[in-house]
Image 1 (cartoon, rainbow, N blue to C red):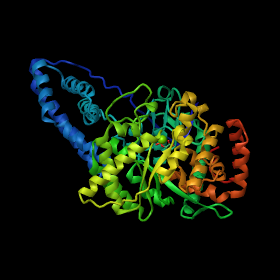
Image 2: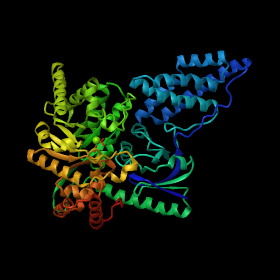
Image 3: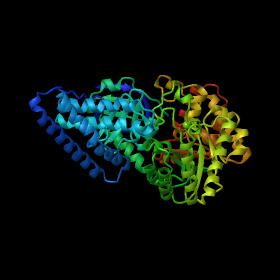
Image 4: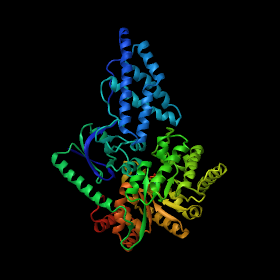
Length: 578
Ligand code: PEP
Ligand code: MG
Protein backbone atom coordinates (compact mmCIF):
# COMPACT_ATOMS: atom_id res chain seq x y z
CA UNK A 1 0.00 0.00 0.00
CA UNK A 2 1.26 3.48 -0.81
CA UNK A 3 -0.02 6.73 0.70
CA UNK A 4 0.13 10.12 -1.04
CA UNK A 5 -0.75 13.43 0.54
CA UNK A 6 -2.22 16.28 -1.46
CA UNK A 7 -4.76 19.07 -1.15
CA UNK A 8 -8.35 18.04 -0.32
CA UNK A 9 -10.63 19.96 -2.69
CA UNK A 10 -13.93 18.13 -2.66
CA UNK A 11 -15.16 16.27 0.42
CA UNK A 12 -16.09 12.61 0.58
CA UNK A 13 -14.42 9.23 0.38
CA UNK A 14 -14.40 6.83 -2.54
CA UNK A 15 -12.87 3.39 -3.07
CA UNK A 16 -12.65 2.36 -6.73
CA UNK A 17 -10.45 1.08 -9.51
CA UNK A 18 -8.20 3.68 -11.15
CA UNK A 19 -8.67 4.94 -14.67
CA UNK A 20 -5.33 6.46 -15.67
CA UNK A 21 -5.96 9.23 -18.16
CA UNK A 22 -3.70 9.85 -21.16
CA UNK A 23 -1.61 6.73 -20.80
CA UNK A 24 -3.11 4.50 -23.44
CA UNK A 25 -0.49 3.60 -25.95
CA UNK A 26 -1.74 3.01 -29.45
CA UNK A 27 1.01 1.08 -31.17
CA UNK A 28 0.56 0.62 -34.89
CA UNK A 29 2.20 -2.75 -35.59
CA UNK A 30 2.83 -2.43 -39.34
CA UNK A 31 2.97 0.57 -41.64
CA UNK A 32 3.03 -0.80 -45.20
CA UNK A 33 1.31 -3.53 -47.20
CA UNK A 34 1.92 -5.32 -50.50
CA UNK A 35 0.21 -3.95 -53.62
CA UNK A 36 -1.91 -7.11 -53.83
CA UNK A 37 -3.34 -6.42 -50.34
CA UNK A 38 -4.54 -2.91 -51.12
CA UNK A 39 -8.22 -3.61 -51.79
CA UNK A 40 -8.53 -5.88 -48.73
CA UNK A 41 -6.99 -3.10 -46.66
CA UNK A 42 -9.49 -0.55 -48.02
CA UNK A 43 -12.27 -2.98 -47.11
CA UNK A 44 -10.80 -3.38 -43.60
CA UNK A 45 -10.84 0.42 -43.19
CA UNK A 46 -14.44 0.69 -44.47
CA UNK A 47 -15.56 -1.97 -42.01
CA UNK A 48 -13.79 -0.20 -39.14
CA UNK A 49 -15.68 2.99 -40.02
CA UNK A 50 -19.00 1.13 -39.96
CA UNK A 51 -18.15 -0.50 -36.62
CA UNK A 52 -17.01 2.82 -35.14
CA UNK A 53 -20.27 4.44 -36.22
CA UNK A 54 -22.30 1.60 -34.75
CA UNK A 55 -20.47 1.88 -31.46
CA UNK A 56 -21.11 5.65 -31.40
CA UNK A 57 -24.79 5.08 -32.22
CA UNK A 58 -24.98 2.67 -29.30
CA UNK A 59 -23.37 5.19 -26.96
CA UNK A 60 -25.70 7.96 -28.15
CA UNK A 61 -28.73 5.75 -27.67
CA UNK A 62 -27.70 4.68 -24.19
CA UNK A 63 -27.07 8.30 -23.14
CA UNK A 64 -30.43 9.41 -24.52
CA UNK A 65 -31.14 13.03 -23.72
CA UNK A 66 -29.94 12.77 -20.13
CA UNK A 67 -26.59 14.45 -20.66
CA UNK A 68 -27.12 16.53 -23.74
CA UNK A 69 -23.59 17.84 -24.10
CA UNK A 70 -22.16 14.28 -24.19
CA UNK A 71 -24.69 13.26 -26.80
CA UNK A 72 -23.84 16.29 -28.92
CA UNK A 73 -20.12 15.47 -28.80
CA UNK A 74 -20.76 11.87 -29.82
CA UNK A 75 -22.97 13.01 -32.70
CA UNK A 76 -20.16 15.22 -33.98
CA UNK A 77 -17.82 12.21 -33.74
CA UNK A 78 -20.24 10.02 -35.69
CA UNK A 79 -20.35 12.56 -38.51
CA UNK A 80 -16.59 12.99 -38.52
CA UNK A 81 -15.86 9.27 -38.62
CA UNK A 82 -17.65 9.05 -41.98
CA UNK A 83 -16.63 12.47 -43.27
CA UNK A 84 -16.30 12.05 -47.08
CA UNK A 85 -13.17 14.22 -47.39
CA UNK A 86 -11.32 12.33 -44.67
CA UNK A 87 -12.52 9.02 -46.09
CA UNK A 88 -11.31 9.87 -49.60
CA UNK A 89 -7.87 10.90 -48.35
CA UNK A 90 -7.44 7.84 -46.15
CA UNK A 91 -8.41 5.48 -48.97
CA UNK A 92 -6.05 7.34 -51.33
CA UNK A 93 -3.22 6.90 -48.82
CA UNK A 94 -3.88 3.14 -48.73
CA UNK A 95 -4.17 2.80 -52.51
CA UNK A 96 -1.39 5.16 -53.58
CA UNK A 97 1.15 4.82 -50.79
CA UNK A 98 0.36 1.27 -49.71
CA UNK A 99 -0.10 2.33 -46.11
CA UNK A 100 -1.84 -0.02 -43.71
CA UNK A 101 -5.32 1.22 -42.77
CA UNK A 102 -4.04 2.12 -39.28
CA UNK A 103 -1.10 4.11 -40.63
CA UNK A 104 -3.28 5.88 -43.21
CA UNK A 105 -5.86 6.88 -40.58
CA UNK A 106 -3.18 8.13 -38.25
CA UNK A 107 -1.28 10.09 -40.94
CA UNK A 108 -4.33 11.78 -42.43
CA UNK A 109 -5.95 12.68 -39.12
CA UNK A 110 -2.72 13.96 -37.62
CA UNK A 111 -2.16 16.20 -40.61
CA UNK A 112 -5.58 17.81 -39.95
CA UNK A 113 -4.93 17.96 -36.21
CA UNK A 114 -1.72 19.92 -36.81
CA UNK A 115 -3.37 22.20 -39.35
CA UNK A 116 -6.38 22.93 -37.11
CA UNK A 117 -4.28 23.42 -33.98
CA UNK A 118 -2.37 26.19 -35.76
CA UNK A 119 -5.57 28.09 -36.60
CA UNK A 120 -6.90 30.96 -34.55
CA UNK A 121 -10.54 29.94 -34.39
CA UNK A 122 -12.46 28.67 -31.38
CA UNK A 123 -14.72 26.42 -33.41
CA UNK A 124 -11.81 24.79 -35.21
CA UNK A 125 -9.84 24.46 -31.95
CA UNK A 126 -12.71 22.33 -30.58
CA UNK A 127 -12.50 20.08 -33.63
CA UNK A 128 -8.89 19.17 -32.74
CA UNK A 129 -10.12 17.29 -29.67
CA UNK A 130 -12.79 15.60 -31.74
CA UNK A 131 -10.21 14.47 -34.30
CA UNK A 132 -8.03 13.02 -31.53
CA UNK A 133 -11.03 11.11 -30.24
CA UNK A 134 -12.08 9.68 -33.58
CA UNK A 135 -8.48 8.71 -34.37
CA UNK A 136 -8.44 6.66 -31.16
CA UNK A 137 -11.81 5.18 -31.93
CA UNK A 138 -11.03 4.05 -35.51
CA UNK A 139 -7.60 2.77 -34.51
CA UNK A 140 -8.98 0.80 -31.59
CA UNK A 141 -11.55 -0.75 -33.92
CA UNK A 142 -8.87 -1.64 -36.47
CA UNK A 143 -6.56 -3.01 -33.80
CA UNK A 144 -9.42 -4.96 -32.28
CA UNK A 145 -9.10 -3.26 -28.90
CA UNK A 146 -11.67 -1.34 -26.97
CA UNK A 147 -9.91 1.79 -25.90
CA UNK A 148 -11.62 3.69 -23.15
CA UNK A 149 -11.73 7.43 -23.06
CA UNK A 150 -13.54 9.63 -20.58
CA UNK A 151 -16.40 9.80 -23.09
CA UNK A 152 -16.73 6.04 -23.48
CA UNK A 153 -16.32 4.92 -19.87
CA UNK A 154 -18.83 2.35 -18.78
CA UNK A 155 -17.60 1.30 -15.37
CA UNK A 156 -17.23 3.04 -12.04
CA UNK A 157 -13.74 4.44 -11.61
CA UNK A 158 -11.70 7.19 -10.09
CA UNK A 159 -9.76 9.24 -12.63
CA UNK A 160 -6.04 9.71 -12.08
CA UNK A 161 -4.43 12.40 -14.23
CA UNK A 162 -1.57 14.85 -14.31
CA UNK A 163 -4.09 17.61 -14.71
CA UNK A 164 -7.72 18.07 -15.67
CA UNK A 165 -8.85 21.32 -17.20
CA UNK A 166 -12.07 22.87 -15.91
CA UNK A 167 -13.68 22.07 -19.29
CA UNK A 168 -12.60 18.40 -19.07
CA UNK A 169 -13.91 18.20 -15.52
CA UNK A 170 -17.23 19.67 -16.64
CA UNK A 171 -17.60 16.76 -19.06
CA UNK A 172 -16.96 14.03 -16.47
CA UNK A 173 -19.95 11.75 -16.19
CA UNK A 174 -20.68 11.27 -12.48
CA UNK A 175 -22.38 7.95 -13.23
CA UNK A 176 -18.94 6.49 -13.93
CA UNK A 177 -16.40 8.89 -12.47
CA UNK A 178 -16.65 8.73 -8.70
CA UNK A 179 -13.64 10.80 -7.79
CA UNK A 180 -10.37 12.12 -9.12
CA UNK A 181 -6.82 12.81 -8.11
CA UNK A 182 -4.29 14.95 -9.96
CA UNK A 183 -0.62 15.91 -9.74
CA UNK A 184 -1.31 19.64 -9.91
CA UNK A 185 -3.97 22.11 -8.80
CA UNK A 186 -5.16 24.12 -5.82
CA UNK A 187 -8.21 24.31 -3.58
CA UNK A 188 -9.98 27.09 -5.45
CA UNK A 189 -8.91 26.18 -8.98
CA UNK A 190 -11.93 25.82 -11.22
CA UNK A 191 -11.22 22.12 -11.62
CA UNK A 192 -11.66 21.74 -7.85
CA UNK A 193 -14.83 23.81 -7.98
CA UNK A 194 -16.22 21.52 -10.68
CA UNK A 195 -15.50 18.47 -8.48
CA UNK A 196 -17.62 19.99 -5.73
CA UNK A 197 -20.32 20.79 -8.30
CA UNK A 198 -20.39 17.14 -9.33
CA UNK A 199 -20.33 16.07 -5.70
CA UNK A 200 -17.37 13.73 -6.17
CA UNK A 201 -14.40 13.48 -3.79
CA UNK A 202 -11.18 14.93 -5.19
CA UNK A 203 -7.60 15.50 -4.13
CA UNK A 204 -5.18 17.63 -6.16
CA UNK A 205 -1.55 18.72 -5.84
CA UNK A 206 -0.33 15.14 -5.37
CA UNK A 207 2.82 15.81 -7.36
CA UNK A 208 3.38 12.40 -9.03
CA UNK A 209 0.15 10.45 -8.61
CA UNK A 210 -0.23 10.09 -12.40
CA UNK A 211 3.06 8.24 -12.69
CA UNK A 212 2.56 6.18 -9.51
CA UNK A 213 -0.87 4.75 -10.24
CA UNK A 214 -1.53 2.48 -13.20
CA UNK A 215 -4.97 1.75 -14.63
CA UNK A 216 -6.67 -1.01 -12.64
CA UNK A 217 -4.99 -0.23 -9.29
CA UNK A 218 -7.38 -0.05 -6.37
CA UNK A 219 -7.41 3.49 -5.02
CA UNK A 220 -8.96 5.22 -2.00
CA UNK A 221 -9.50 8.97 -2.37
CA UNK A 222 -10.11 10.71 0.93
CA UNK A 223 -11.40 14.14 -0.05
CA UNK A 224 -11.70 15.21 3.61
CA UNK A 225 -8.05 14.80 4.49
CA UNK A 226 -6.39 15.06 1.08
CA UNK A 227 -5.09 11.52 1.10
CA UNK A 228 -4.85 8.96 -1.68
CA UNK A 229 -4.10 5.31 -0.85
CA UNK A 230 -2.88 3.08 -3.63
CA UNK A 231 -3.60 -0.66 -3.47
CA UNK A 232 -4.63 -0.55 0.20
CA UNK A 233 -4.60 -3.71 2.35
CA UNK A 234 -7.82 -5.39 3.39
CA UNK A 235 -7.92 -3.84 6.84
CA UNK A 236 -7.59 -0.30 5.44
CA UNK A 237 -10.31 -0.94 2.88
CA UNK A 238 -12.67 -2.09 5.66
CA UNK A 239 -11.81 0.93 7.79
CA UNK A 240 -12.55 3.27 4.89
CA UNK A 241 -15.73 1.42 3.97
CA UNK A 242 -17.13 2.19 7.39
CA UNK A 243 -16.11 5.85 6.94
CA UNK A 244 -18.00 5.90 3.62
CA UNK A 245 -21.10 4.57 5.40
CA UNK A 246 -20.76 7.09 8.24
CA UNK A 247 -20.40 9.99 5.77
CA UNK A 248 -23.48 8.78 3.88
CA UNK A 249 -25.45 8.70 7.15
CA UNK A 250 -24.45 12.27 8.07
CA UNK A 251 -25.16 13.51 4.54
CA UNK A 252 -28.64 11.90 4.57
CA UNK A 253 -29.41 13.51 7.91
CA UNK A 254 -28.24 16.95 6.76
CA UNK A 255 -30.19 16.70 3.51
CA UNK A 256 -33.40 15.99 5.36
CA UNK A 257 -33.04 19.37 7.02
CA UNK A 258 -31.97 21.22 3.88
CA UNK A 259 -35.23 23.07 3.38
CA UNK A 260 -35.24 24.52 6.90
CA UNK A 261 -34.34 28.21 7.02
CA UNK A 262 -30.75 29.15 7.71
CA UNK A 263 -31.21 30.97 11.02
CA UNK A 264 -28.76 31.38 13.86
CA UNK A 265 -29.75 30.19 17.36
CA UNK A 266 -30.60 33.78 18.27
CA UNK A 267 -32.82 34.29 15.23
CA UNK A 268 -30.70 36.03 12.58
CA UNK A 269 -31.69 34.76 9.14
CA UNK A 270 -29.11 34.27 6.42
CA UNK A 271 -29.78 33.80 2.73
CA UNK A 272 -28.04 30.76 1.29
CA UNK A 273 -27.76 30.66 -2.49
CA UNK A 274 -26.03 28.22 -4.83
CA UNK A 275 -23.06 28.54 -7.14
CA UNK A 276 -23.60 26.60 -10.33
CA UNK A 277 -21.43 25.94 -13.35
CA UNK A 278 -23.85 23.98 -15.53
CA UNK A 279 -27.58 24.56 -16.07
CA UNK A 280 -28.40 20.96 -15.11
CA UNK A 281 -27.15 21.61 -11.56
CA UNK A 282 -30.05 23.91 -10.76
CA UNK A 283 -32.52 21.13 -10.04
CA UNK A 284 -30.42 19.59 -7.29
CA UNK A 285 -29.48 23.06 -6.01
CA UNK A 286 -33.16 23.71 -5.30
CA UNK A 287 -33.60 20.25 -3.77
CA UNK A 288 -30.62 20.86 -1.53
CA UNK A 289 -32.19 24.02 -0.16
CA UNK A 290 -30.84 26.88 -2.32
CA UNK A 291 -32.86 30.07 -1.95
CA UNK A 292 -31.63 31.27 -5.32
CA UNK A 293 -28.59 31.09 -7.56
CA UNK A 294 -25.97 33.48 -6.23
CA UNK A 295 -23.41 32.75 -8.92
CA UNK A 296 -23.96 31.12 -12.29
CA UNK A 297 -20.53 30.68 -13.88
CA UNK A 298 -21.89 31.18 -17.40
CA UNK A 299 -18.49 30.75 -19.05
CA UNK A 300 -18.97 26.98 -19.00
CA UNK A 301 -21.82 27.41 -21.50
CA UNK A 302 -19.45 29.38 -23.70
CA UNK A 303 -16.75 26.71 -23.31
CA UNK A 304 -19.15 24.06 -24.50
CA UNK A 305 -20.47 26.11 -27.41
CA UNK A 306 -17.76 28.70 -28.05
CA UNK A 307 -19.66 30.96 -30.37
CA UNK A 308 -21.35 34.33 -30.08
CA UNK A 309 -24.40 32.37 -29.32
CA UNK A 310 -27.09 34.61 -27.88
CA UNK A 311 -29.73 31.96 -28.44
CA UNK A 312 -27.83 29.18 -26.62
CA UNK A 313 -27.32 31.43 -23.59
CA UNK A 314 -30.95 32.57 -23.67
CA UNK A 315 -32.30 29.01 -23.73
CA UNK A 316 -30.08 27.89 -20.86
CA UNK A 317 -30.97 30.89 -18.70
CA UNK A 318 -34.67 30.42 -19.42
CA UNK A 319 -34.50 26.74 -18.44
CA UNK A 320 -32.69 27.59 -15.23
CA UNK A 321 -35.27 30.26 -14.41
CA UNK A 322 -38.09 27.77 -14.92
CA UNK A 323 -36.51 25.34 -12.44
CA UNK A 324 -35.95 28.15 -9.96
CA UNK A 325 -39.56 29.26 -9.73
CA UNK A 326 -39.64 32.59 -7.92
CA UNK A 327 -36.07 32.39 -6.66
CA UNK A 328 -33.55 34.91 -7.99
CA UNK A 329 -30.93 34.01 -10.58
CA UNK A 330 -27.59 35.82 -10.51
CA UNK A 331 -25.93 35.58 -13.90
CA UNK A 332 -22.26 36.34 -13.81
CA UNK A 333 -21.04 37.54 -17.16
CA UNK A 334 -18.32 35.48 -18.85
CA UNK A 335 -15.19 34.93 -16.78
CA UNK A 336 -12.89 33.43 -19.40
CA UNK A 337 -9.11 33.29 -19.25
CA UNK A 338 -7.17 32.54 -16.07
CA UNK A 339 -7.37 28.75 -15.68
CA UNK A 340 -10.30 28.59 -18.10
CA UNK A 341 -9.39 28.46 -21.73
CA UNK A 342 -10.99 31.32 -23.64
CA UNK A 343 -11.98 28.96 -26.43
CA UNK A 344 -9.56 30.71 -28.77
CA UNK A 345 -6.61 28.64 -27.64
CA UNK A 346 -4.67 31.77 -26.76
CA UNK A 347 -2.03 31.27 -24.08
CA UNK A 348 -0.73 34.17 -22.04
CA UNK A 349 2.37 34.42 -19.85
CA UNK A 350 0.42 35.14 -16.65
CA UNK A 351 -3.16 34.31 -17.50
CA UNK A 352 -4.61 35.27 -14.11
CA UNK A 353 -3.09 38.73 -14.50
CA UNK A 354 -3.82 38.99 -18.17
CA UNK A 355 -6.79 39.41 -20.44
CA UNK A 356 -9.18 37.56 -18.15
CA UNK A 357 -12.86 37.98 -17.40
CA UNK A 358 -14.32 41.49 -17.89
CA UNK A 359 -11.11 42.51 -19.68
CA UNK A 360 -11.63 39.67 -22.16
CA UNK A 361 -15.29 40.64 -22.60
CA UNK A 362 -14.47 44.27 -23.30
CA UNK A 363 -11.93 43.09 -25.87
CA UNK A 364 -14.54 40.85 -27.50
CA UNK A 365 -17.61 43.11 -27.57
CA UNK A 366 -19.49 40.87 -30.02
CA UNK A 367 -19.38 37.90 -27.65
CA UNK A 368 -20.14 40.11 -24.66
CA UNK A 369 -23.06 41.88 -26.33
CA UNK A 370 -24.56 38.53 -27.37
CA UNK A 371 -24.47 37.39 -23.76
CA UNK A 372 -25.91 40.67 -22.45
CA UNK A 373 -28.73 40.49 -24.97
CA UNK A 374 -29.54 36.96 -23.79
CA UNK A 375 -29.49 38.12 -20.15
CA UNK A 376 -31.77 41.08 -20.72
CA UNK A 377 -34.15 39.11 -22.93
CA UNK A 378 -34.54 36.55 -20.19
CA UNK A 379 -35.02 39.29 -17.58
CA UNK A 380 -38.60 39.64 -18.85
CA UNK A 381 -39.29 36.12 -17.60
CA UNK A 382 -38.09 36.14 -13.98
CA UNK A 383 -35.93 37.55 -11.24
CA UNK A 384 -32.50 38.19 -12.75
CA UNK A 385 -29.41 39.85 -11.33
CA UNK A 386 -26.32 40.66 -13.39
CA UNK A 387 -22.93 40.25 -11.79
CA UNK A 388 -19.74 41.65 -13.31
CA UNK A 389 -16.55 39.75 -12.53
CA UNK A 390 -13.03 41.04 -11.95
CA UNK A 391 -13.81 44.74 -12.22
CA UNK A 392 -10.74 46.59 -10.96
CA UNK A 393 -11.42 50.27 -11.59
CA UNK A 394 -14.19 52.83 -12.00
CA UNK A 395 -13.50 53.55 -15.72
CA UNK A 396 -13.71 49.81 -16.41
CA UNK A 397 -16.99 49.60 -14.50
CA UNK A 398 -18.41 52.68 -16.23
CA UNK A 399 -17.46 51.32 -19.64
CA UNK A 400 -19.24 48.07 -18.86
CA UNK A 401 -22.34 49.82 -17.52
CA UNK A 402 -22.42 51.91 -20.69
CA UNK A 403 -22.29 48.81 -22.84
CA UNK A 404 -25.20 47.39 -20.85
CA UNK A 405 -27.18 50.59 -21.52
CA UNK A 406 -26.40 50.29 -25.24
CA UNK A 407 -27.67 46.71 -25.28
CA UNK A 408 -30.85 47.77 -23.50
CA UNK A 409 -31.36 50.56 -26.02
CA UNK A 410 -30.91 48.08 -28.85
CA UNK A 411 -33.58 45.79 -27.36
CA UNK A 412 -35.92 48.76 -26.90
CA UNK A 413 -35.53 49.67 -30.57
CA UNK A 414 -36.27 46.07 -31.53
CA UNK A 415 -39.35 46.05 -29.28
CA UNK A 416 -37.97 43.13 -27.31
CA UNK A 417 -39.34 43.13 -23.76
CA UNK A 418 -36.93 43.22 -20.82
CA UNK A 419 -36.80 44.37 -17.21
CA UNK A 420 -35.31 47.85 -17.06
CA UNK A 421 -34.48 47.51 -13.37
CA UNK A 422 -32.36 44.39 -13.32
CA UNK A 423 -29.97 44.82 -10.37
CA UNK A 424 -26.39 45.05 -11.64
CA UNK A 425 -23.68 44.24 -9.12
CA UNK A 426 -19.97 43.60 -9.05
CA UNK A 427 -17.79 40.88 -7.72
CA UNK A 428 -15.28 42.20 -5.29
CA UNK A 429 -12.34 40.00 -6.15
CA UNK A 430 -9.58 42.41 -7.08
CA UNK A 431 -8.18 44.18 -4.01
CA UNK A 432 -8.30 47.59 -5.72
CA UNK A 433 -12.09 47.36 -5.86
CA UNK A 434 -12.37 46.53 -2.17
CA UNK A 435 -10.22 49.56 -1.39
CA UNK A 436 -12.43 51.88 -3.48
CA UNK A 437 -15.68 50.13 -2.52
CA UNK A 438 -17.12 53.52 -1.44
CA UNK A 439 -16.70 54.83 -5.01
CA UNK A 440 -18.20 51.70 -6.49
CA UNK A 441 -21.26 51.43 -4.22
CA UNK A 442 -23.26 54.37 -5.71
CA UNK A 443 -22.96 52.80 -9.17
CA UNK A 444 -24.16 49.27 -8.41
CA UNK A 445 -26.93 47.34 -6.68
CA UNK A 446 -24.88 44.76 -4.82
CA UNK A 447 -21.43 43.44 -3.98
CA UNK A 448 -20.47 39.80 -4.05
CA UNK A 449 -17.08 39.01 -2.60
CA UNK A 450 -15.17 36.46 -4.66
CA UNK A 451 -12.75 35.31 -2.03
CA UNK A 452 -11.14 32.75 -4.35
CA UNK A 453 -9.63 35.53 -6.40
CA UNK A 454 -9.50 38.15 -3.67
CA UNK A 455 -7.13 35.90 -1.70
CA UNK A 456 -5.06 35.09 -4.79
CA UNK A 457 -4.68 38.73 -5.84
CA UNK A 458 -4.21 40.20 -2.36
CA UNK A 459 -1.62 37.68 -1.22
CA UNK A 460 0.04 37.17 -4.64
CA UNK A 461 -0.60 33.42 -4.43
CA UNK A 462 -1.73 31.52 -7.53
CA UNK A 463 -4.96 29.77 -6.53
CA UNK A 464 -4.17 26.75 -8.70
CA UNK A 465 -0.52 26.22 -7.77
CA UNK A 466 0.03 23.43 -5.25
CA UNK A 467 3.57 24.68 -4.50
CA UNK A 468 2.24 27.82 -2.84
CA UNK A 469 -0.97 26.31 -1.46
CA UNK A 470 0.28 26.78 2.13
CA UNK A 471 0.40 30.53 1.54
CA UNK A 472 -3.16 30.68 0.25
CA UNK A 473 -4.79 31.91 3.43
CA UNK A 474 -8.40 33.19 3.40
CA UNK A 475 -8.03 34.46 6.98
CA UNK A 476 -4.85 36.45 6.47
CA UNK A 477 -5.46 39.70 8.39
CA UNK A 478 -5.33 41.63 5.09
CA UNK A 479 -8.27 39.61 3.77
CA UNK A 480 -10.25 40.09 6.97
CA UNK A 481 -9.69 43.85 6.80
CA UNK A 482 -10.88 43.94 3.19
CA UNK A 483 -13.97 41.94 4.14
CA UNK A 484 -14.74 44.32 7.00
CA UNK A 485 -14.36 47.26 4.66
CA UNK A 486 -16.68 45.85 2.01
CA UNK A 487 -19.33 44.91 4.60
CA UNK A 488 -19.14 48.38 6.16
CA UNK A 489 -19.44 50.17 2.81
CA UNK A 490 -22.36 47.92 1.86
CA UNK A 491 -24.05 48.82 5.13
CA UNK A 492 -23.44 52.57 4.71
CA UNK A 493 -24.84 52.57 1.17
CA UNK A 494 -27.66 50.16 1.89
CA UNK A 495 -26.57 47.58 -0.69
CA UNK A 496 -26.47 43.84 -0.20
CA UNK A 497 -23.14 42.11 0.33
CA UNK A 498 -22.73 38.44 -0.34
CA UNK A 499 -19.71 36.10 -0.34
CA UNK A 500 -19.62 33.63 -3.21
CA UNK A 501 -16.05 32.36 -2.90
CA UNK A 502 -15.28 28.91 -1.50
CA UNK A 503 -14.43 30.44 1.87
CA UNK A 504 -18.16 30.73 2.61
CA UNK A 505 -18.62 26.95 2.43
CA UNK A 506 -15.86 26.04 4.87
CA UNK A 507 -17.33 25.18 8.28
CA UNK A 508 -14.34 26.73 10.05
CA UNK A 509 -14.59 30.09 8.25
CA UNK A 510 -18.35 30.45 8.22
CA UNK A 511 -18.79 31.40 11.91
CA UNK A 512 -16.18 34.13 11.43
CA UNK A 513 -17.98 35.49 8.35
CA UNK A 514 -21.29 35.56 10.21
CA UNK A 515 -19.57 37.27 13.11
CA UNK A 516 -18.26 39.93 10.71
CA UNK A 517 -21.87 40.65 9.74
CA UNK A 518 -22.36 38.60 6.58
CA UNK A 519 -26.02 37.81 5.89
CA UNK A 520 -25.92 36.36 2.39
CA UNK A 521 -23.71 33.74 0.82
CA UNK A 522 -23.51 31.45 -2.15
CA UNK A 523 -21.89 28.01 -2.15
CA UNK A 524 -21.68 24.76 -4.14
CA UNK A 525 -25.11 23.06 -4.07
CA UNK A 526 -23.77 19.86 -2.49
CA UNK A 527 -22.48 21.85 0.47
CA UNK A 528 -25.69 23.80 1.17
CA UNK A 529 -27.15 21.36 3.75
CA UNK A 530 -23.94 21.46 5.77
CA UNK A 531 -23.60 25.24 5.49
CA UNK A 532 -27.18 25.70 6.69
CA UNK A 533 -26.54 23.35 9.58
CA UNK A 534 -23.46 25.36 10.63
CA UNK A 535 -25.56 28.54 10.56
CA UNK A 536 -28.19 26.89 12.74
CA UNK A 537 -25.54 25.91 15.27
CA UNK A 538 -24.10 29.40 15.89
CA UNK A 539 -25.26 32.21 18.09
CA UNK A 540 -24.72 35.63 16.54
CA UNK A 541 -23.47 37.05 19.81
CA UNK A 542 -20.78 34.32 20.15
CA UNK A 543 -19.51 34.61 16.61
CA UNK A 544 -19.28 38.40 16.85
CA UNK A 545 -17.00 37.89 19.79
CA UNK A 546 -15.03 35.30 17.82
CA UNK A 547 -14.70 37.75 14.92
CA UNK A 548 -13.44 40.51 17.24
CA UNK A 549 -10.82 38.17 18.64
CA UNK A 550 -9.68 37.23 15.15
CA UNK A 551 -9.52 40.83 13.99
CA UNK A 552 -7.16 41.57 16.88
CA UNK A 553 -4.73 38.86 15.79
CA UNK A 554 -1.83 39.49 13.44
CA UNK A 555 -1.13 35.99 12.17
CA UNK A 556 -3.40 34.05 9.80
CA UNK A 557 -2.13 30.69 11.05
CA UNK A 558 -3.03 31.63 14.62
CA UNK A 559 -6.47 32.75 13.42
CA UNK A 560 -6.96 29.39 11.71
CA UNK A 561 -6.00 27.58 14.92
CA UNK A 562 -8.50 29.69 16.85
CA UNK A 563 -11.25 28.95 14.30
CA UNK A 564 -10.48 25.22 14.38
CA UNK A 565 -10.73 25.19 18.15
CA UNK A 566 -14.03 27.05 17.98
CA UNK A 567 -15.45 24.70 15.36
CA UNK A 568 -14.33 21.71 17.38
CA UNK A 569 -16.19 22.99 20.44
CA UNK A 570 -19.32 24.35 18.76
CA UNK A 571 -19.96 22.32 15.63
CA UNK A 572 -20.30 18.67 16.60
CA UNK A 573 -21.45 15.91 14.27
CA UNK A 574 -20.37 17.42 10.99
CA UNK A 575 -18.06 15.52 8.66
CA UNK A 576 -14.67 16.56 10.06
CA UNK A 577 -13.26 18.81 7.40
CA UNK A 578 -10.99 20.90 9.57
C1 PEP B 1 -14.17 33.92 -6.70
O1 PEP B 1 -13.21 34.38 -7.30
O2 PEP B 1 -14.22 33.82 -5.46
C2 PEP B 1 -15.34 33.43 -7.44
C3 PEP B 1 -16.43 33.07 -6.82
O3 PEP B 1 -15.26 33.33 -8.78
P1 PEP B 1 -14.41 32.20 -9.53
O4 PEP B 1 -14.06 31.14 -8.52
O5 PEP B 1 -15.26 31.68 -10.63
O6 PEP B 1 -13.21 32.93 -10.02
MG1 MG C 1 -13.29 34.91 -9.35
